[in-house]
Length: 418
Picture 1 (tube, rainbow, N blue to C red):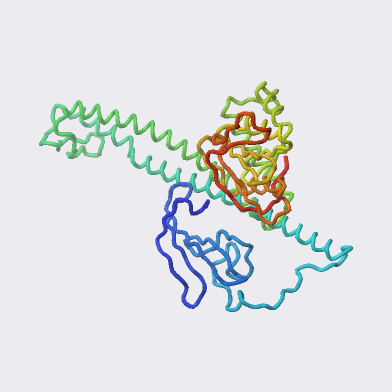
Picture 2 (picture 1 turned 180 degrees about the horizontal axis):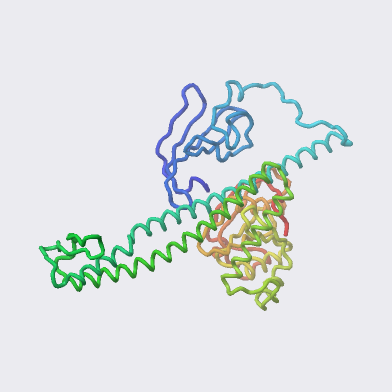
């Protein structure tokens, strides 16, 4: 949904002799540039998967954890080997008891490590995507600035023509839009021709040229300064990108934690600067203190995309969270047909969609904190807070939804607890 939402389907094809269907899409990236994407539906038994390819045929995302050459993220896509999806030979266990007290403990340790590895990869991928988008935006800005600089032309050339027109008012020869003047600024003062507006006098054309000189000079100074700022910003982003790749190559989770903190700190600094440079540690306002008091009864989480998720506890906490704390554009979630916690995703950007990954993580929390938490899959309703109302006289925690959607998710508490 994140990659193909709004994309246009161009073609559907099937690989000859393979159970592989390709959906070709035309889309736009975050900076508005056209791009081609391919969705692979790999209908091959145990190797069945959905894979997203970029224009070069490289895998950028998958539905299920892939295995094998040409199947993993960053590989050039290749269909799985014949028979990979149909064999029935049992796989050896991926773990051994070793020093663990039991095979169950060994399995628990193995899958905890596997989950940690997947979480690390997901966080790294989120950082990569964000940095790639920011870098592309800076590159596009530079291209636009360079084009603007070329559009304004040579400021000194406009001034020189204005000076020549004024210096030749008495002896200029004019024929329609062409005027012959003596170039006093060149060696031997040759006669040259200039093209001007045939309806303007020489004085009017000279004034227009001086105005263009002033505008072009000012624009060139401003554009050059912005290009310098953009170059510095681009260098900083590319430095951050190189740092991230070193962290990923080393699989250093603690360094990635520090990288997360740097990103959040940079966001905080930017917001403070935009609001007038308030110093860190400024006492909270009454509104902030009241908001903290209102959310005191809720569990707080942070999604992989950085969104705050609030989870109610008791029925009265749910009411407080939904009807006192949540804003109209925040997202509300609840397990379908089961008692459970109200879940709120805080959406600071009015009118902007909450990322689908965050919705899934919040839905998993709603399923986890419900009476259906032991089920393999749970249906979860979600809707913006503005579509909720409280029936008159209803018990605490009951709401009426005028519009909603439903997700099927696995109950889990898989995001950072604040």
